[in-house]
Length: 93
Image (cartoon, rainbow, N blue to C red; front, side):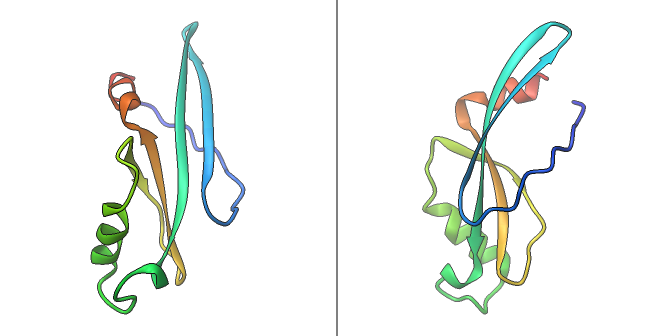
């Protein structure tokens, strides 16, 4: 699969993103969301960050699946999700 980087304004909280792409005259519509998960929302904010991410994702909407985990900051980690039903479409691209 080829990749295109699209800058998205950094907004606090959740961002719903819909991307319509046409490749070789074939239109695809993909739905993403980016959420910022704050370290202080963890039960043990001073613990291992991988455990924190796992804890935060355990409470997440099961209709969405993790697509990409972004670079963490001192305050949060941005995580991109794609609708679970669209995951096979992404794999076929």
